[in-house]
View 1 (cartoon, rainbow, N blue to C red):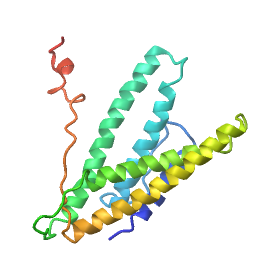
View 2: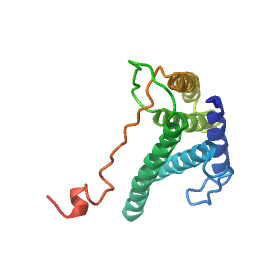
View 3: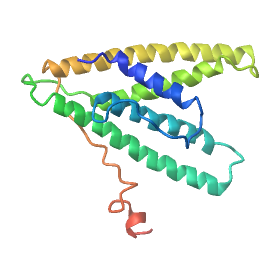
Length: 202
């Protein structure tokens, strides 16, 4: 079983690569072979990283309203891409564990492996950008101390979540927990489910 800590290394690589140019429209190049888990993880974190910066842009108080609407729609599309990618990661695990003999009374988890990995990707972004706060020259000591304290909490969260995901996957492999996937069933982007899109305007 792959070491979950290596997922953090992939996420850190993605974020470092993005910040070489720090542009939401820059080209995306995935260095991993299509079809393997690393390829999915790299793509997943890239979506998260671009969306992180779109969320920053749209919060500019001086942003042009038309530009804001454009960014909002990009964020909506990104959220759908993110969900689709997470479900592909879960599909990977469903296939990987398809021959596991689960124990009678095997427990279920509050979320699937991929949605836990999704949180790990977001934590990598939080850590990177909190570290940026520590090198700012335009803030006072209180801000720096607060950022340092928050960073320490984020490191602990990452360590704990990495361990929890590792234990979850080990438990699934051993048959102690079920590999059970719940799809998100997002409705707002589906023209057959969103009443505004299918014409039932209120």
